[in-house]
Image (cartoon, rainbow, N blue to C red):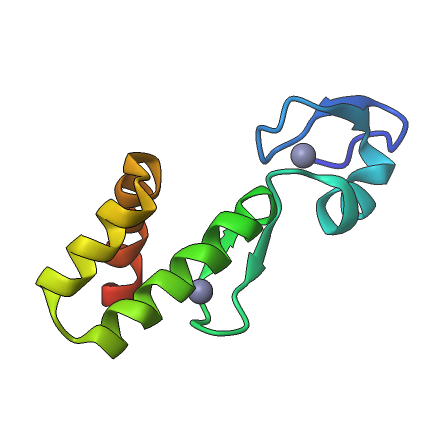
Length: 99
Ligand SMILES: [Zn+2]
Ligand SMILES: [Zn+2]
């Protein structure tokens, strides 16, 4: 069913922003904080708002591979003293393993 382009709709991505339907393509391509981009390194999709975190995690994964020792990696993580990063790391590691 076609609807009027001037009708206001909520963003289908669920970002909470409301706009006229005719702006949907622009919003989803340029403005939406919940739009996804493809990682240039690992080729998975992630939300644009997670870009910085994603790249940090990618580097952490690389560091882990280089160290090749889980023990050394855990020591490094405790040095970084960031439980938050560890939690996210575990989540994103699962995504990367699926690749
Ligand atoms: Zn949006
Ligand atoms: Zn990545």
